[in-house]
Image 1 (cartoon, rainbow, N blue to C red):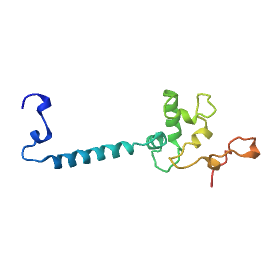
Image 2: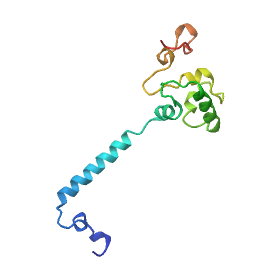
Image 3: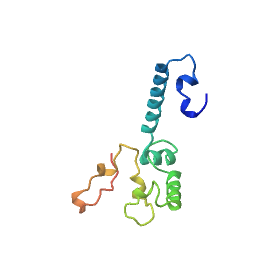
Image 4: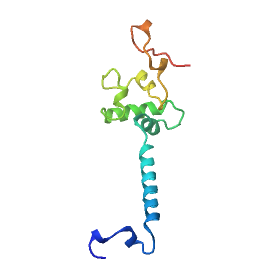
Length: 124
């Protein structure tokens, strides 16, 4: 073997035809693409990091951890929950942190009776 241009998969594995190597390469590509596709989104990352008791609610000591993390990185994953943009996460904003697929109170819809503001009563 001389230069890199002369190295082929068949040269690396003598006696093997190129078909099994192609199949191996395709399999590796599928596994890699599946692992990238399964990467969690921002909501899933927040819940995985802060919902330590895994009850799908940020509560108890988790609230303090969320506030501390937001104060340390106000432009990070938690920034989307500071809906009033005051630089702090209040109780109502933390209550809106839900796992992927779950909506906040009132399904995330605005309540017409409250002047277009989101309904802050908990969903039943």
